[in-house]
Image (tube, rainbow, N blue to C red):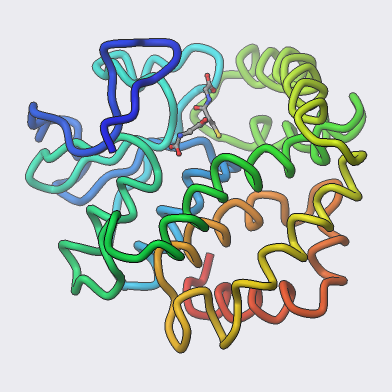
Length: 250
Ligand SMILES: N[C@@H](CCC(=O)N[C@@H](CS)C(=O)NCC(=O)O)C(=O)O
C-alpha cells in the first residue's frame, strides 16, 4: 500500500489522513471517475455488486477541475459518506470490501489474490491500452464518450475527444513497447494466463474476490472498443466475464 503517485510524489495510495466530507455528493459514497476508465470500473463493479448506492463525479480528463482539492491526480478517487478519502483502485476495493462484509482477504493475506490484483494494473491495464489505442481511428472511437457527457461544454467535448485521441495514441504506442508480442497477440496471451488462475467460477473460487473485480473492471472498459472480440472469443474468460457482468450489473 501507500504507493506514491509518479506525478505528485507527496500523494499516496490507500486511506488518506484527511477527511473530506464536503467532497461526498448527496451524503453518499462518491467516486470520481472517467466513464471509461478501467480502474474506475473496478470500483463501480464492486459497489454495484454489493448494492451500495453511490454518487459519481465525472472528471474532465484534460482540466481535472473536479480533483483540484486532491494531491492524487488520477482517477478513481473515492470519498466515503463520512468523508474518508481513498486513492488507488485496488486500495479502494479493499476499503469498500472491508467496510461491507469483508468477503475477500485483505492485502497480504492471500498471495494469489494479491498477484492477480497487481496483474490487473501492471499487465492487463497496459495490455488493453495498447489494443484500444492501436491507431488514431480506434483512439477516436474510444474517446467518443466525452462528446456524450452532458456537463462538458461543446469546446471541452471537442478538445477532449481530439486531443485525448492524440495523447492516448501515444500512450498506446508506449504501452505496446512493454510487451514482446503485438498488441492483439499479447492480449490473448494475458487472457490465457488469467485463465490458469480461474479454477472454479472465479479467481476467488465459488465467489468473486478482489482479483475478480480488479480484472473484470479492466476488461469491462474495453467493451465495444477495438479488441473486445478477443475477450468475447475466449473460451474461459468470456464465461467468467459474463458471470461478473451478471453479478455486478456494470
Ligand atoms: N494505479 C492507479 C491508476 C489509475 C490511472 O492510471 N487512472 C488513469 C485514468 S484510467 C489516470 O487518471 N491517468 C492520469 C490522467 O488521466 O491524467 C489506480 O489503480 O487507481
